[in-house]
Amino acid sequence: MARVMVRAIVTDIEGTTSSLSFVKDVLFPYSRARLPDFVRRHSHDPQVRALLDDARSQAGPLGDEALIAALVRWIDEDRKVTALKGLQGLIWETGYRNGDFKGHVYADASKALRAWKARGLGLYVFSSGSVKAQRLLFGHTEEGDLTPLFDGYFDTTIGAKKESESYRRIAQAIGTPPAEILFLSDVKEELDAARAAGLQTCWLIRAGTMPNAKAHPIARSFDEISL
Image (cartoon, rainbow, N blue to C red):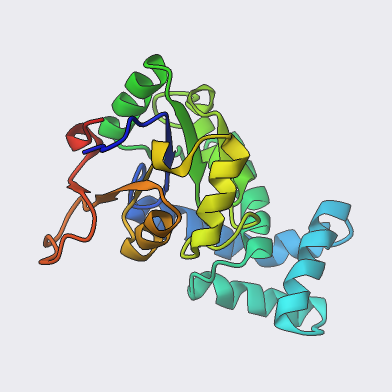
């Protein structure tokens, strides 16, 4: 697959290392059910207040109750709002620590990540979920804590996932030429942006019909990714 030797791998989470259903059917409903009470109880905590102020800068000058309604609506719409992702991460932290659920990671992804780490490749995550949420997911899987495998995490504070500049910033942050970085995702538009920034790409299509025009190298699982 690789034309230039890969020195670092940046992976998406949802639909790539982890199932879409875990995020849509477990994490999102969990945070949606608990967000109103969480905001009401913690609205004066400095970290939560900063996130609410950030959310309000996008939603408009709303009172707390109106802002809560907007945040719940954003969850339903799967909006990639950094402040919302930060609040969800705080809520999910309680769920993970209480054992309400475990982070889902595909067995093939776990196996490949371990093998790549053993080969000395740098491993990074880029997800619309907050860095906190990323660490929580990989830190509480059925296979235990996978966070030691990763050298760094990126969320939308570095930029949107469908904008090429985000990937240039990631390459600069990890100190690796873009051509020596492989980006893994299940979303074509994200892969397009990464390729425009000079990264190598692989399109994870775990289920469904293969596209007629193969804009990127395709794999059904991490087992099919050869470096």
